[in-house]
Length: 215
Length: 215
DNA sequence: CATTCAATGTATGAGCCTCTCACATCACTC
DNA sequence: GAGTGATGTGAGAGGCTCATACATTGAATG
Image (cartoon, rainbow over all chains, first blue to last red):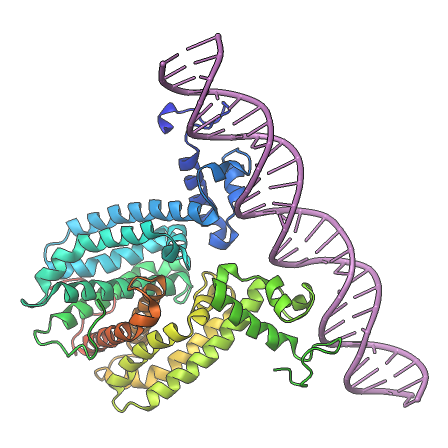
């Protein structure tokens, strides 16, 4: 446990796993996911290059652990954002904006979270996403015309998530200029887009899905 | 592929650059961007590990060249999709669907195209995106209420792009199950979401871009 | 033709990384 | 206070990126 508080004067570290995750976040923040290396994380934690492998199966496992930490913090941010809003419509839309804003602030975290393949390979990350969906599902139901099934509610949330994630991708690519500077403006756009999506899904006799949504 | 037609019986390859790009696409298709290595591309092209560096400055440059090739093919796909549609509204929405469909088919290409940092580091990739925007700008103008400036039109396109790209990210993450199987259903959802976005931007007195949430 | 040269491929190697395996050290229990 | 499992170390195999010096060749030039 970290509770022992011994940084690194002893042979054993105390809480190497957590320290490595922290180091990982810092490194990724500086040099990106591709520049990250387990060896560097070990170096910063003043531990031999092999030590991390006692706690994480491989490089990706360490990155996934860091991503999980990020998603925890993200969840807290969103819960806070949601709490300040009254109507379910705005609650849904607000999250899109706060997602974009968070991306600009915690750049590194999103790089990890969205690293290609990581999510696909680590179920616990997908699980974290699902919890996030649960957070908003009630609002989605409240907003939809009565009689719509859970499928439609989930589809609406997916659409919101897709919109926000897409904006984040563009933002972090530098599509709009310096991410830090334009973040607020893009967050507003995401907010507006999210409102349009919610409105679109609320049309009582929404357009025939054309193709039934997957499961 | 070799322009001169000599595959590899001679000392010189004939068209190593193109062959490397092709090999890159195949490798990424099999093992993802992270699994890709310049060495492997050289191996498949029956060339020494150092040869690729005669044509590409570094690993990322080769990936960027492959990404450019992908974006060329993508553009062709979209031009075709657009051509089959009459109204500007549907033209805009259609592209979102075709983007998702293309992602499922050319999985590897999208992995490269969306590799974190690549776009940010290689201007020619951003240039390709801009050309793509130009393709749709006329439709965006046609759709918006008169009096809206170019900014709004670009904002609408950005929103559509964000939505489509987000869906693609979720799809390729396996969020909806096997990408190949659910692709069509997700494409339909993207289509529907895109229609909602277009409709949202067409409200004559829509909120000002930087607008306050008031409602 | 013979020669030269610029482009293209090769050989070699330094330096870094991932991950493994045998071994050292320590916290805990009985 | 001895045993034991968890945690860290050392050494190293194998792979990768990229730089540098060298080999080969098609084409231009005289």
